[in-house]
Amino acid sequence: MIKMLKIYLSLILLLACYQSALHAAPMSFKGSITSMTTIGKDYLDVESGYVITSKDSLGIRAYKAKGSGYKIKSGGGFHLRKLLRINSINSQTNLWLFTEVGTMNIKKNSKEKNHSYLSPKFQFDYETKRVYGLISHKFLRVGHENFDTSKMEAGFSFYETGYTETQPWLILKAENTNSLFSKIEYTPTLRFINKAIFIDAGITTDGDPQIHLMHTF
Image (cartoon, rainbow, N blue to C red):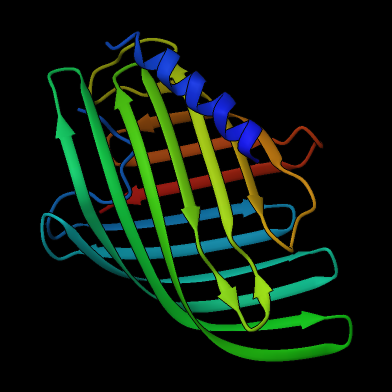
């Protein structure tokens, strides 16, 4: 994991040297609603949040996944806080804190148990009109289980477009959840952004399709 982190940090810093409305933020303008769905071979993630201030959003989330003999289902509420935003003429840098509380059902072998959880997640992202990078880590300890999730993304846009046009991106994603998955999942992804609609479609290096949808109302 440390080796992967060094590789992706280097990639993001390299891409940042080629700076060129920025799109891929988890929170939009005050009064808006942002809904997201992520579907993979072994997991489903659905969430929706309402922006209550320029820095805060409240929402609900449901998640289920299976792997390494586990089946988990969770549901709860979250608070998203924008800790830091640095704007320049051509770029935007953000630091976010997600704090989620809820309940989780864990089934392993023939045993099944319900737990309550408190899960913070930190996310750092950087974006220009042509370059994008993200690093996040979610802490999720339930009972005696460790379901921490680490994620990294880096990529570039093929060309600049106007706000009303669809902009295509090529993104490489890397993600791993402790206990559930025994190795890091790498997913080359095509991203399409048009106004308030955001679509990721990719295939992991193991050949499993993945899709992520985001819409802001």
